Image (tube, rainbow, N blue to C red):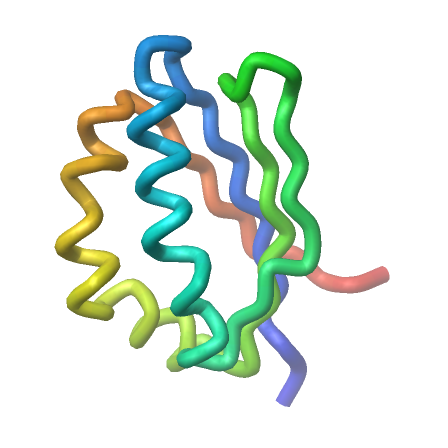
Length: 93
């Protein structure tokens, strides 16, 4: 089975950058517990656009990450940030 490769594009209102970054500080460290890695993280100068390239060992790992209690508890930060998030499943070429 091949890895699951994802690109996440977040567009964050300037007023929500602090909450968005606080959310990420809480959830990104737990990726590894579910076979996930953050391969690349890019951000524009004012923090209003962020791109992540993520890899998971399996879809099950992604699903379990999404259901993690700590991630769910941090979700209000993401909501309060006003960020719109697009998640794309991609393949290495």
